[in-house]
Length: 288
Image (cartoon, rainbow, N blue to C red; front, side, top):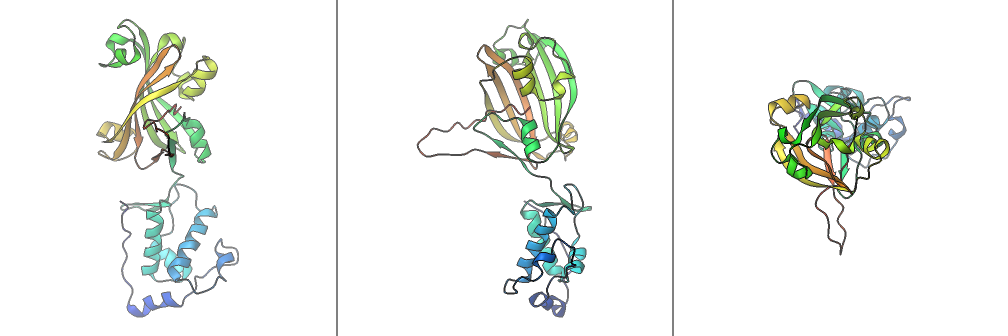
């Protein structure tokens, strides 16, 4: 649910200008090319299109503060009622976001995950025009017997098997979007280091170690982030997230088991359904 952008209502005579006023544009503005459009469309519809064009013009980059309701009204010579309506529509469309007490900001491209195939987070972020980066929060070697309950069984190893454990924070365009905690069977990846897991794991596994990732078994559920995880992800305690518990496999057995949290306001999952075929409700995901 998106917040409503509030405004003071103008007197009735001021509101009436919505019926006849054309948005004011300058010759060099992104809206100039549309200034001569036919007037049969409501002013609100025209303003909404002009604001979308403004967002696409490059004048405002993702993360920039967008025009306020007052500035929209002044720039396009419409009432604040109309400006409020158009701005609220941009919020509900996911093009901008309203931050209470701060203002309205341009949203970066939404990241999506295709649930029907292996997906690289690095490649997906780049496709969305958002620079992928990784912060390694923790890295150590441990035996399976010292790992949390269920890890050894999921990886089908003995309690003496050597594992790597690391935590990573994935960022897209500087915004934290994924918090990952992962155990990896060490014999598949000798001499693994913290520096090496700071980049694409999928590329590391397949190119550097010559492994073939055959898939991942995943369980996905909605959660509210605890305070510690929310702080790392740059959001509020209790914020909505998607928790994925997954096990990745190779032809020679399980390679990793993970618990990963995706910010609910940054990700959407995509699962194409087709007639006559049984669909896999899980997602084959490298997100690396």
